[in-house]
Image 1: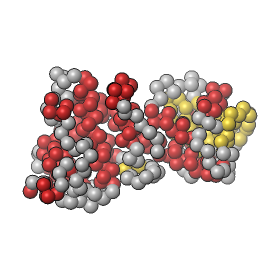
Image 2: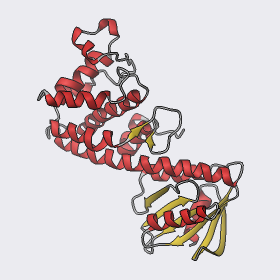
Image 3: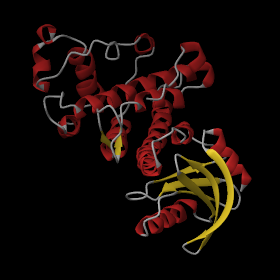
Image 4: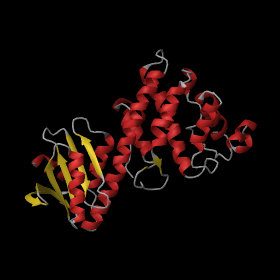
Length: 309
């Protein structure tokens, strides 16, 4: 599988081509980095087989990375024999931006094989969660975009939908810091309470929270804002009404907002720390989302690019 050897070489690992038999598998050592070998196998179900081999290697005290490629070269799965053998699958015909970023990060040099395995486990574990989140985020973005009035230009509908979801995503990181009235479930509780009162989530919850609370110092808020509790003043501009919102005012239906909370944000755990935690979405997802869902032309026009941590 010379193509895999070339792929690993492109991200900074040392290219290898050494056939080996390990735990009943015919494999090819295609690369090594910081003393950590990467073994390539062919697999009909790459994610499952890469994870299984990585776990078997770990149970026998072997440290290695595993790259499983399906027969038609349409899917590639990466796993590492360390810890719970985190695994990431990549669709080669249409790789997602987060998956490509993951590959690049695997080439970072480490002080030894054990450190390299631990680092790869961190990368794969965090990126697998990030990739799932990004996939669901993009799916919801498309639904939200389609729900906006069709009289609105296509590019503006995408920008408006992205703006709404980005605000909520940002708030989940703020909530993770304990800054939304000190409640780790502040947003879920507010959504449930609003729906219980048969109110509209956009008009009765999000708009007052964005434009009457988060964007104003506490001393300048109206009395109704006090019902949210202790909420910080965020003056970065994200919670100011956007020119597009003034030009194309519209309220998204409750069904879309319920899907955003129930099917996306409440299904993931968010960490506001400096680096990703296992099973959690990290703040750098904000930048990745923008680069991943904006068209190349829009990214160039706005100068929006994701810079890895």
